[in-house]
Length: 261
Image: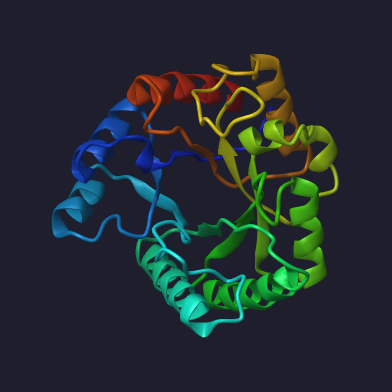
């Protein structure tokens, strides 16, 4: 039996007005949400979140960044805007009471890529630590950190105490990584978990078990999470371009809730 994890949902799965999205997610049965930096900036949205008693647990800090901004550059005009964006997003996350945030890396472009990421992610992790937020890196096929294994290696090599892995089961499926194998030695570096499904090739963010996943493979993931002592949140990350996002969330919520006991 798994530990008492929180089940959250990435709010950008729905395209309705903000307050309506929060209400719909609450109706599904959710008590927690993940947000993007632009969310909960208006009084109406904040009032809706408060009145629905929804907890904000995580913020996608590199989402909505200025086009062309990157940490993988020696050009301050490209790096500085992303620093400002992420730090401000982390402050907003902290104001909302979130305990987690994450960044999505770009592609590897040259031999200096990892050194740049080590420098900038360490600085961001330091700021996150100052506002009581765990900063996670999401492994993502096609980026500088395409696998769980490569991301964990980077985190350990970098050595900052506030850098963690965001494990995305859909991305692991695309990279043909078995959660039981790649998370066996994760230690205390597992910071957050995304739940979604796909066809094993494309990053589709389908409802759970609508792609290559089975109830058994999902159950295996939760067994691994229990084995490694993970008791942080798990979050449904469904895309808003699936045929019926609310139905996908509702079904995924039921599946995940059953597995969490």
